[in-house]
Image 1: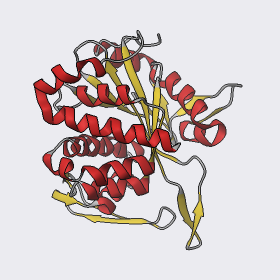
Image 2 (image 1 turned 60 degrees about the vertical axis):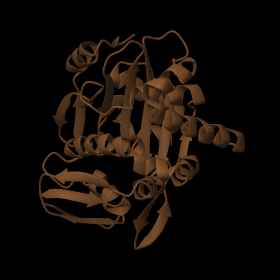
Image 3 (image 1 turned 180 degrees about the vertical axis):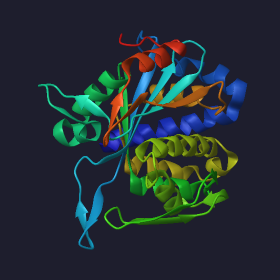
Image 4 (image 1 turned 90 degrees about the vertical axis):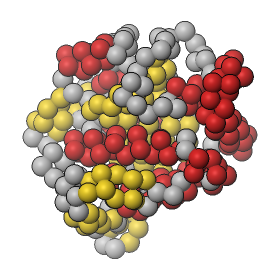
Length: 290
């Protein structure tokens, strides 16, 4: 990201915080800046969590295009619930040219353009923008807002030597710092593997978003903005960030629905169910396949 882009991202996120604090009066003041550009019925963002290194024989190895978390955020232009859909990284998808591979290979094979194209084909929605977040930034962001409270529903104990993380949590409420939170959202050592993990990621992101618009986050605004500009790569404009932030200022079920891309396991892969996906998208008033 260029210096100018970082500057505008910093300004945009600062304005977003101001809008959240201002409430209704803020909306009246900033309403000219919080309308989505273009004419589509919705605005969508591909959210990617990346792991830029892993351990091999105890040594850190730089990775290229390791998409460890894949989500699509779709915000309707008209009033109504937004959708945050997780795409399991083991989802099979047909690539241009006819090859069938896991969706998480798309970044390494063709960069953000190919990743956007194949995810769009899976969820049946056009993808308008993207945001990539490095896991190092995720850890810092959670710590900057003072941690996040999460209810753990099962024993979670596992050491991933290649991934370079371990987790040891008992059921109950936990106040998680950045490192613990990262282990929580990456954990997949249970019967449903990546499917259970996507559910935990949705739960955690909802809690983190709530913290980001809290008084604690406002007090830590400088740290939050520094982390976002350093560890986030996005093509969203200031106006688009303002619009998304305004619509997501409340984290209730009435404003944000979470879901996992419908499908079923076929061996080690997740095979999408196009009919169920279309029903889910259309149930929220979004135009599937258009």
